[in-house]
Amino acid sequence: MLCKICKAKGKREKAVIFIRHHKLALCKNHFLEWFEKQTLKTIKHFSMFNRGEKIGVAVSGGKDSLSLWQLLTEAGFETVGIHISLGIGKDNYSEKSLKLCEKLSEKLNRPLIVFDLKEEFGYTIEEIAKLSGRKDVCSVCGTFKRYLMNKIAIEENLSVVATGHNLDDESAVLLSNTIRWETGYLGRQYPVLSEREGFARKVKPFCFLTEKEIVSYAILKGIDFMETGCPNAKTATSPVYKQALAFLEHKMAGTKFRFYKEFLKKAKPLFEKEAKEEYNLTPCKICGMPTTANVCSVCRILEKIRGVNAKSGKN
Image: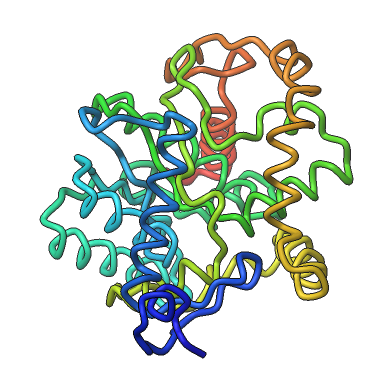
């Protein structure tokens, strides 16, 4: 198969990727150009950030976040990497993830802010989940990562936090929330979460790009990334929704793109009012971060753990 753009110019360059829902076959150079153009187009369309702003990029060591960091840096934006070291010991997962983030930081010559959960709080994410009585490590992990990303952004005076969430992620979340009719979440799901009462702005520049397209970008750009997922993700429900959408995508190319794009255009406005009225934010009485209760969920979990350890005589 020949590159569509090269073929139009009378050249016979072989395609390295076929983007099925766009019916687009591209060679390496034209794919990289297309990928970068799509990302910058999304940033501009949703007014995510400007070149004068300092952008914190949440990096986990995976293909999505590391690709986003490299693309934004090479596009001329001022970036800072933010990595939360969770202390996941199985297969040295957290150690390997951190090393990959440090490697790209050195390659890009951009700073990397590292928050070590064990050093700062005294517990790994798995210990926090176990001691707090939570069976689902993923939900606890998400709570702490969102909290810490926001806290770091505020403390470091970052204009925005960019995450590597892709079309597969966003469409899976949308399907999950639609099936359960989580109207509050549906009203808030958007490529940009504006700054509000102690919350830094959050953006998702890869929201219209698929996982396949991102991994192709990472490989072609020579980015080293974690090829295995988090060991704790086995209990997560998101893969089930991704599998369902993958089946539909296989049968009808463009399903995920249309599902998410049309939701943003037509359905989301129907839920926005309810989402805004659903909660009011106040500063947490312990840490000062915004919360819907007197004490935020992170502080409640940490207080519970300390109480359990105090009763057992542990420090």
